[in-house]
Length: 488
Image 1 (cartoon, rainbow, N blue to C red):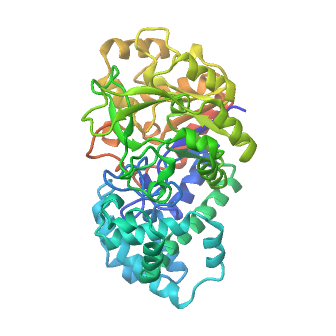
Image 2 (cartoon, rainbow, N blue to C red):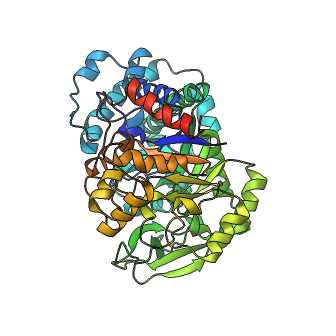
Image 3 (tube, rainbow, N blue to C red):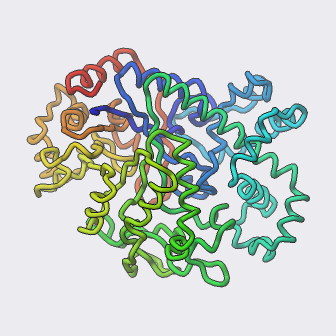
């Protein structure tokens, strides 16, 4: 069924509290989507983030980011007082300031926790029991605080190696702290469930995003190191990334630990099946990042300064997805099949039947690219750009002049319509079943609103939408395009 959607991270929503949350502004955005004829809201991973603030390198693949817990909701529930929130003046400059969030959010959460302990909700115990990942995550978070934020590889040896006696002793000594971290997840998941229900009731489905890899400094690797390619000292032997290409001369050195795919296969990919089943209950559709890594993955020797000296190794292939269908069941998947593709990757995509991605910003190199709309099939998802790309206007300003001229001629871009509207029109008018555009493109913003520049540290993952951006006039204009191109 033809449909449209918008990509907007939760952190980019407006709010007076330094970052977007799962509260009233999220519901207002759902209302905007519904009025605009958009049937999908695509988000980025919602995990708690660490150094660099990337949602693709979080402390847990299962846990939610506490920063997204809505403070007004906590006030309504009696966990916080308005005066306590007002005492924390969050910077309002259209950016997320993660250091400020850490300094001001957690003292508020501690106040909420003190009130929680005096009157623990009846369903808290059931929530803890239903989430088998929670015990390891909460202990990991408590130990990380106790160790001054150090990575788990730097903890005392008995804890680093998860000696049973050391874990039991730590769990007893830190029981109050462990419960604090469980409490934050209880709040997050309850608010997320309310938002998802609100969206679904209004005809809006949520597209989640699952990074293929997890961070080395995560509860996931600490809790189950045998699932990863680590040496006897629990250090990675090789790490993840992608090789050099036309965009990056040194490639991209991600640094994530690689999976021990053979051991996972013998165990029926149990860890992965838990991970995907969790996402199935969390969202309506799941985008799997770096899909090509299931066919073959790039392995870089640990300690290399760049990604130049890696090698391609076989991934689990179709066997993985057969097991997934058997154990998790049918579930709508979008395969992020961008980057260096081979016939093997294309065959895996065809065998799974998952729709792949088409990105318009990649289409105009002068060749008869797969990303040009005349080459699409219906079973794909077209994007103007992704969170890793420039906005449409930013791209047009920085693109090779020949590419920009080709795009203008191919798409009949005009200043009168607006170049960004012309590119979005191309996505909506294509045969692709689903067309997703970035909210920044709907608003006609340049690269000041870019979400992320890969392989860089700096002003990434920070852009926030202005509270006045969502207007009935804009919703009606979007809806008009959806009517014109039969995407309602």
